[in-house]
Length: 414
Image (tube, rainbow, N blue to C red):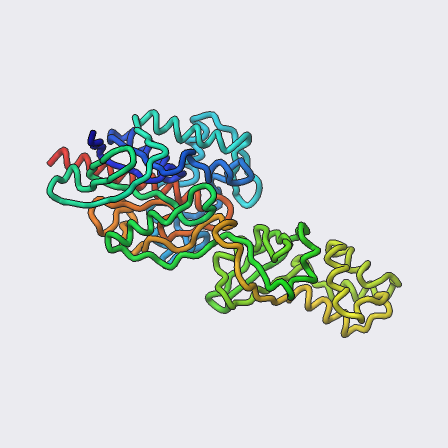
């Protein structure tokens, strides 16, 4: 039997669920499809299971501050029309407790499941039909019947609809069902896809060169991290985490979105003050090993590993030449190293790149292909770590749902 909703949404993640709920409550008949058996797995596992669902510091007037892509300003319209405050109000309406960690990051108090239940309730309130798991085998277009422009062949039967929304996410975390379906569909209809790459991802190094530091795995400390030069320079002050294969933690996840293969990273492992004068002052009053004096300012494991690199750093501080102290301090505060790669999509939190925003309306998320919309991570809009990507999901979904309702109203009026 042919299913004929007003709109079909492919992808039951953050953007797809929210768009479905809003569109349904605005009077549209909505069918939501997803090939994965479980709903919203990325929400469930994010933020340590508590989901960092938005960020209070997001400034819709300056999206380039927290978003990247070929045109970061594309997201200004959607973000300004559905803000973090709007989504917070929705959580409060559903009685979901939340808290702020730092830098504006908001998390559910109890569990990300609260947020998933909220989205499912919003869909229920909108009478949304959900087919899950349901694989889409083929999509075609015909303008012969305006109410059935898109025909879908699915493993639950045929579907035809006026509008099609693609909310299939990116390639990140394939073990929970990530796929390239949305990008293939975009290309099928002649849309450009900006080069895809893992983002918010740990960085790796050549095993031989990393060997001295692999024993620091699990060690975390606040750092200043930078990459690029001049106008392309990007810098963060965040926590760094050493791993067996390289570097992770918020500092590295943030910088990874801007890092390009072959580019060096610049690290200051003691960003609060200059180490050289501290160590020179210690030289005037202490006979401790240089590593012991250094461990007053840095984790002792790091101090021991770093000073082990040079015989001249393995002396008492009062017996260490000033030049050697200067070299030590400079190495720690101007550490330049070049990653050989990333941990890939398996560990990436998001996918950078995506459907070219030059072929989408910033007001409606509709593409140049009539009735075909793209929302959330599948679009070439990538947010910083800290709830920005989820806010883009809510905002783009809301903009799309409002446009779908306006389109239906205009069609009925005509």
